[in-house]
Length: 428
Ligand SMILES: Cc1ncc(COP(=O)(O)O)c(C=O)c1O
Image (cartoon, rainbow, N blue to C red; front, side, top):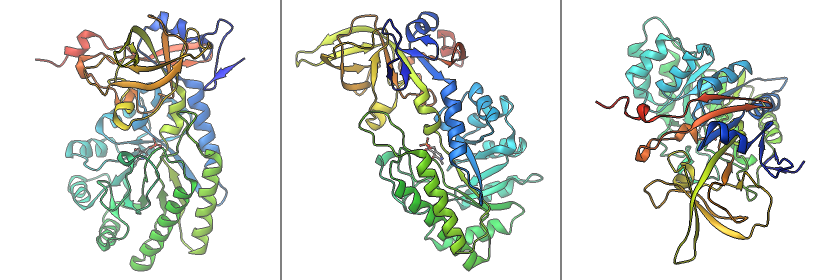
C-alpha cells in the first residue's frame, strides 16, 4: 500500500489513519478534528525509552506535557512507564485527575505562583525544578512538612540552531540561572543546606533541534558544570536532566537526525566525560515532547470555499484557524497536507490554506501544491500532534475541536468538541 507521512492510502484513494479512512472519521466526528494515532504515540514512547538506555548510567524519559496533555494522554504515559513534566497547576491537575503517580512528576516553570506551589506540595509532587533564587525562597517559606526533590535550571549558554523564539538557553534567557554566574553556586549551596533533597541540574536548549553536536556540547557543559560544583562546593550533582527539543520532520525539507543515534551519542559522550572527571552522576534524564506526539497527530478540516484573488493567489478556506493551528502564525512553521478524500492526483495548483479567523496572519499552510481542490473536500494536515491542541484558543470565540484517539480498529473521543454553551459557561 502506498503511504504518505507513514499513513496508508486505501484503494479508494483515501487517507487512512489506523484502520479508518479520514473520510469516515469526519462523517462520525465532524471537522475540524484532531486525530491522534495512539499506536504511533506508544511506538514513539517505546523507541525513546529503548534508545535512551545504557548499562553504566540510569536513565529516565520524562514526557513534556506542554506538547499535548489530556487525561487519556496521561494514562498512556503511565501505562508506558514514562515520567511527566508539567509547567502549570492546570497540567498538574490534569495529571493528578487521571491518577498519575505524583512521585513521577517534574514541576517546571519560571514563575510558579504561591497557589501552584502549595498545590504541588499538597499532592506531593516528586520533583520541583527551581528556576531562580526568589522562587526557592518562596518554596522554602511554603514547605512545612513535605520536601520534594529539587533540580536547579541552568543556562549553559549552548545556542541551539533553531528558531529564535524557541531558543531558551542563552545568557539573558527568562529561564533558569547561568552556569557562569557565581551567584548560581551560592544558590546551589543554599539549596543543598536546606531541608530539601538537592538532586542536580536541568537545562533545555531549545526546540526542534537538528544538530547532534548541539546536544553533545550541551551534555559536556552540564557535566563540566557539575565538576565545577564538586570542586568549588564539594556538592555532588546526582541527576542531570538534559531537557527535550529533539527535532522531527514536518516537511521534506527537514533534515532530521536519527533520534536513536543522537541519544546514543549523548549517552556515550556523557559516560566518557563522567568517567574522565570522576563524578558521581547517577542518572540522566531527557524531556521529549514533540518527538513523542507530533507525527502521531493529523488535523482534519473541511473546505468551505475557495477564492482566487485579483493578484492570482489561490486560497482554500477551511473551517479551522490559528485558534487550533497556532504554529504557522507564531513561528512561520511549515506543514504538509493532502486532500484526504482523494489523496493522489496531479498536483497542478498552488494554494494557500487559510483559516477563518480575523487575522491576516491566520494561515495553515502557505504555497502548497495540490490537485484541484473543491468545496467540502477534507484537508488533512500532518504532524500536528504537538503544540496544537495544547496551544488552542477560543480566539474569535471559535470552538475548540474534538480530539480523538485512533488505535488500529478502535477510535474514541478523548476530548469532546466544545459547544456554544461551553463558550459562555464562565461568563457572568
Ligand atoms: C523545559 C522544557 N522541557 C522540555 C520541552 C519539550 O521540548 P520538545 O517538545 O521540543 O521536545 C520544553 C519545550 O519548550 C521545555 O521548555
